[in-house]
Length: 271
Image (cartoon, rainbow, N blue to C red; front, side):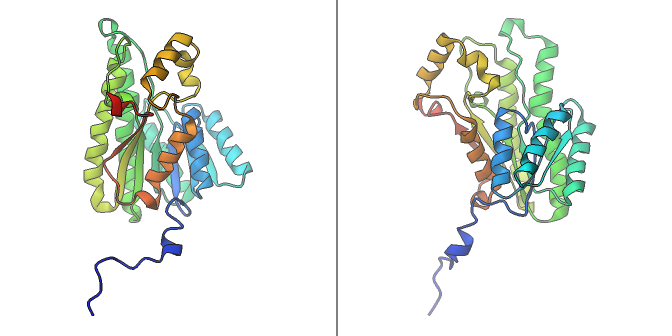
């Protein structure tokens, strides 16, 4: 009798590890920020060896030490998002330390809020440099190691709901355009890296309850306006973003690439 088309699945073995990252090395630039720290812990708890970086090497090493104290393999390194050679050196250092590199979780990003008529060339260039150019060259450096390793891998970039939606009453020209450009970078990289078994995706939250959102949440009026726009009636927590990040880096998302997951409490659904 001809076998059916549906593959036979060893459910206990194949499905139990869908969200596990054992044996994988994850590099998280920007990993000691409010969102990045939650992602670093989530990936370590899922079994990954984790490297975090940023301009402040002491903060990166402090987070790595906390992870190590909890029994995880971790590394903290310095990285300047304004230097392509510095980005490449940090990637090479992570790969050399662990002997492989499987995952990029890019949490680097800044905002310089300026109204359209007040935007300066200096501020605009810096936001595009950090939010878009950094993503390009981190992705390139990591892809070289992933392709050489021949084991596939995953790349994930942290975006924002502003990668798809403009914002009335605020100066978001540089930020929104850089994040919108990153969406297309994700799609292009997904197409180019697919033959190597490397997936590329994005996670795009609305405001997340971290220090970076203090100016939104500390002001009662802006806080009220923010919640009125979000159907779920709350801002995101770092763990909301961490869960999506682990998904995109885990076997559960092996057939997902070129996508952006909007963690926005329903904002896009109601615009």
